[in-house]
Structures are given as structure tokens and as C-alpha cells.
Length: 288
Image (cartoon, rainbow, N blue to C red; front, side, top):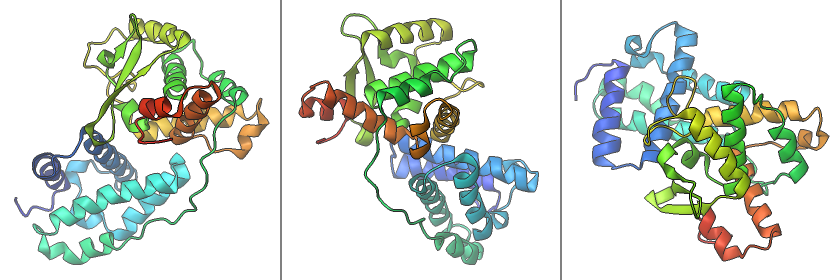
């Protein structure tokens, strides 16, 4: 590796040499790390007025990284858990480059010393049917983004899909014929299939027709055509839940997140009388 302090070259080799070749990381891990650095560079552009190619390592010091993590919580509404996941990706990068830029070891050690955010592990809440309906009423289905978001939220609440699985879905992962289902690639590269209810099939048929994408295209693309980031999904859920509070006051006491929707899906299946072992299978868990 070159000893250049140019962030772009260091990061490229981190992904290609370390994550892909050495660690053989899963596509979900790579996507999560990619999203972390996309957000970091976006924040750096706001602060330094520079593109990633112009950044140097000294600008990504511990103070800047801490401010970035605070920005994620305050401005993007991410949880402490997600903040810690972003920090883990950053630490992994700094540990990797420590062998190649020893002259920056003091800066690297300061970044590695940034502590995780402590948080209280609470029992995960779930949403009532009225709360789900209130949120689904918010997206403007007269617009492309509104139709995308409405379909996305419906799929999350029906299938209990993990947000990392959702952002990795391609059009070819949805099967809408006899035995309609969606195919996920979950943790540990394990694949599973979850059946789709009739109304979900109707919504997905309409959405796929509108998208008219190739089989490998993201099922829920961003406005630029690429896959949504996990933070983008959290952002849109937070936005719609805040608006829905005006009609459903009980939402004021709840934080709506992808994990809450996953738990909501499990509770709906349980209340419908579905066997626990089947729920665990559909959710990709060892047990419920």
C-alpha cells in the first residue's frame, strides 16, 4: 500500500484489500461500511467544503469523528446502537491503515479511543394496527417517492425484514406468482423466503410495474437510482411517524425504527395464531 494520506486511496484499498479479499465480508457488512463513509464524506463536505478526493487524514481527527457521530444522532435521528455501528466501521478503517501510515499513529489512536455510546437496553416496543395505519396514511402516493415509501413500509411491517436486508433487495428477489414470496439474504449469508399476503402482492405488482427495473436493480431505489442507505430508511420512518403523531397521539410515546417494525411484524404473526417456530423461520431467527 502507498503511504499517501489521501483518504480516497486509503479507503479504496481498505474495501478491496481488507474487507473483500482478507475478511471476505458479507455484502451487508460492505453495504453498512459503505453507507458509513458516504455519510461521513457528506458531513465532511459540509464542514470542510471539500470533496473526498481532497481530504487528508489529519482532517478526520477524533474531534471531527465525534462531531460526526453527534450529527447522526441529533440531525438524522439514529439510535445509539446505530451510532455505535457507524463508529465500529470507522474504527475498522483506522485500525487497518495504522500499519501503513505510522506517522499518523497518534491521530489514529485518538480515533480508536472514542468510546461507544452507552444506552439502556429496553424491551423493544411494537406498533398497534391503528399506529401502522396512521403512518401509512402520510406518504403522498401521488408522487413516486410517496409510492415507494408506502410500499416499503408495508413490506417491513408484513415481513419483519431487517433494514440491512431491505436495502439489499433487488427486483428479482420478489416472486409474485403462485406461492408469492420475497427472498432475503440475511445474517451470515443465510437465505430465507417469507410469504406475502394478497394486499402486499397487489402493492408490489404495481410498484414493480412502475419501477420497470432490471432484475438486478434495487427494489426500492433512491432518487438517483442506487440503493437506499439504512440511515435513509430510518430518516423516512422518523419523518412519517412525526407527521402521523398529529392524528395518532400514541405515536408520541414511541420511537419508530426498522427494528420496531420488525418486532411489530412478529407480534402480528403471533396474534394471528402463527406457530412460533414458523415465525422464527420467516424472520431469520433461531427462536422467537
